[in-house]
Length: 394
Ligand code: ADP
Image (cartoon, rainbow, N blue to C red):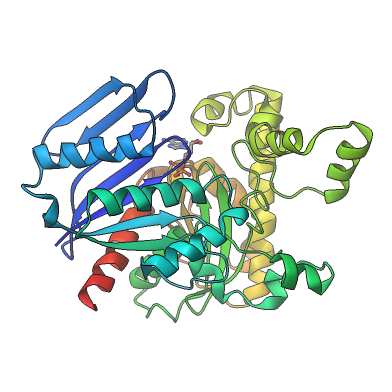
């Protein structure tokens, strides 16, 4: 059964076409820079190409993808039995992937205010695919769903309780599709059932978050009401005293949109280093450029503090998992964020750690009580799997 997975960002559409349940990737690619002077369409499958052209909106991008699939991989649109969509914010309403109907669309629309940068594009992708693939079952997979098991003691902020009830201000958590995928995979590698594992999963990509997984379920996570809280990220500050924001508002007269830009786009690795948000550009300058070194050291220190606090929250931890572009590729971050933690039963094997780049592997010493893994994430495959299951059960 062919399942198409669609991930619509603000100016991009990523896609992957799978044969399920074989988990075979048939083709993949993306449309980038939608709405700009020159957009890019990259396609990999029976043929590979990269085209530069003008793509005005998500709908046009989706049409290009559908046509390329028709030309190269399928004879009829009807062959695509299901389309799985990544949706960033499902609020408290969705604790698993769901088949999309009018009620689901209404609920996603009701939550647009919680993720104004993401959900409108996700919704555009859903509506576009409903037109292009009218006979396919459409499924939504939410980044927040895995975190709906987080208990109140960890999801509430200590604001007056009304603010939660009236305005829905609470920790939601993100990257749930990835945290769930790697937690399940870690359980599999360790020969455990999915609800037997306690793990700390570190998703380190453009956005970064860490999750405490207790008995296979999310128990706490570093991202909060928005994807800004928690770890230091490429361009985001992560945790900061809200008092500093009040100071900027009151004394420097920064406007809310300027503060938004400051915290989301100009902070984190790029803010401290002044050079780049991308580890590929920063790593060659580590221990050579003072601010780059500081940015990387701060990034690792913040992560280490979260890992320590989640060990305290969980008590028993079987595994620590690194994933995402940085988690999978940057051995320095894995080493520095876990150094001198023998007292917690964490012993990283430096030689193994250096060898595992962009692939799955165990990087802890045999004596380490807590096992440490690198597990490449595959959010699209997880969405394809959920879509396949929903179709099979309907
Ligand atoms: P996203 O969060 O958008 O899915 P990724 O998980 O691909 O993104 O992570 C992107 C980030 O990962 C880049 O900004 C870069 O810092 C880092 N990264 C990706 N590949 C490498 C690599 N080979 N070496 C070092 N850093 C990498």
